[in-house]
Image 1 (cartoon, one colour):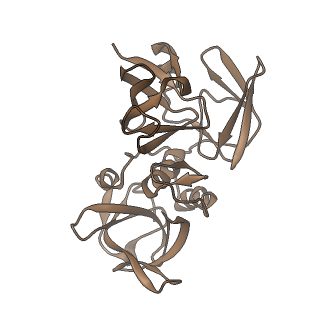
Image 2: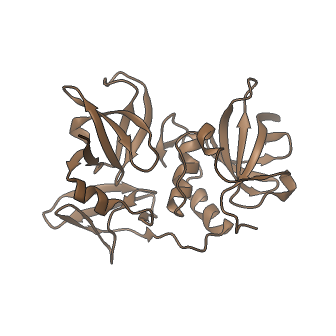
Image 3: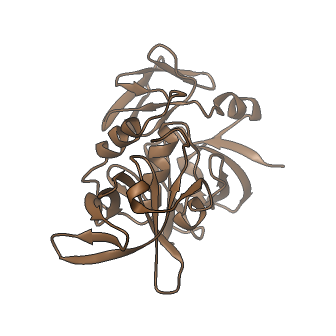
Amino acid sequence: MAKYAICEQVLVPVRKQPSDQSEMTNQLVFGDLLKIIDSNTNWYLAITQHDGYEGWVDKKQIRVIYQSVFYKCTDYNNSYCYDLTASATSTTGKTKNLLLGNKLPNYNNNTLNIANDTYQFSGNAFTPDTNITGDIILNIALKFKGAPYLWGGRSPFGIDCSGFTQLVFMMVGVQLYRDASQQVKKGIDVNFINEAVAGDLAFFDNQEGNITHVGIIINNKKIIHASGEVRIDSIDHQGIYNEEQRIYTHKLRIIKRLIVSLK
């Protein structure tokens, strides 16, 4: 029978194999929910609730919770930390560090609740609105500008291209899968670059035709994406053009619109 868990640490590595030496394929952040499907001596094999991504996590770094607590924290209209860094202090004196994009379970009036712990949140919170605009998406995306690239990363202190797009869209209430090759399956096609608008996603392929990169359109000439760092580059019908290197770094495959109201 599956167990349930929540991440109460600011960042927790998810490993390919149950070993500290194994490749980090993903990260958990504060508020992430998991279903535990297997275990060994020191590790849980878990699936993240928001995207179904599977990997091994150290037992000491997550908190096992009752199924009822799990479902109480399951809310696709979560509020999120809107500051680069913040903290939450429980009534029992426990302090948790938080980062931009961390979920705030059961958030209400500057407090959040996990099981029997109530925390006072010190920062600014962002709650998704049903009226999602391109400007809202870009305002969130630009908060990550300059974040270093990290394979498997999901925070402003290290993030990969699909982790960046997933986190930005999660904060506006749109759930995406973890990898770019999965994210491309959502949304409707935008046929030409000059029809792209702020908040559209652009996907890029390699020589074998596999989707390997994704970024967020700013307008039909600019894109923000994680490549070395979260940066703004030029884009046209060929792909992303790095003006510093004077080369095309990514070949455009397709543009998708996830929110039909964007214009």
